[in-house]
Length: 320
Image (tube, rainbow, N blue to C red; front, side):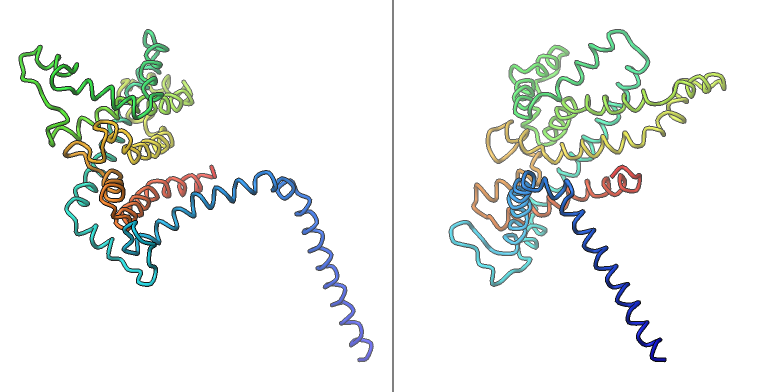
């Protein structure tokens, strides 16, 4: 019994010693890894970016629970949801949210459909393929400011290109941006013109990755070209559609610059007010910083609702 009692602690001490050695070995490997050794180079920029970006986001969220107006330091003693209740009860907020939703869905859907159509045409090897691809992709290289000024001139009810075309056919000039019923469709049309080329390139890359054997097999089975694309080719472009849709929706959420450049002020044309323009107007024009922060927080949640499902999808596919 005595021998057994002295042997068991010895075995336990050996196991514990091995665990300590193994722990020290792992720690030594970690400290000597490239990740730790390179930390002086990436650590400082990472910390500064984290403070500037995520710190700013966190501070904005906290401000949205106060009544901060910008004149005095914010008081954090009575945090509540008053600004969110005010926003949800506001007719201007509901109108901006609806416009945001219409812009997001319409712009994305039309750009995807037009981009897919153009990609199919280019995939068939039409004449001047490279020139057509360059022409449709070129607008994406332009900034929102340049695009806004271009379409502001085209929408001009007195001498714009669209006015000349309309009057040529005997119709009266149309005030595209002055009519609340036409302003938002006009903005969507301009944004589709600028970004449908991106969807075209994404779909074209997806089409070129599909083996030609599938086209030949469909022809042997007697399937028409339209039926081949609808039943065989387009379903295989799911990942291209998801990727392009997410990027296009992000562009739609960034439409503030385009709308601001149209008129040069925080109030966009009637019928085109979105959450971003409403947020900036409330904060910088009326000094309602807490109210603007609440709108910005809800706009952040809207952006996350677009990006988070995409990241989850990519993670399930093993791409992350």
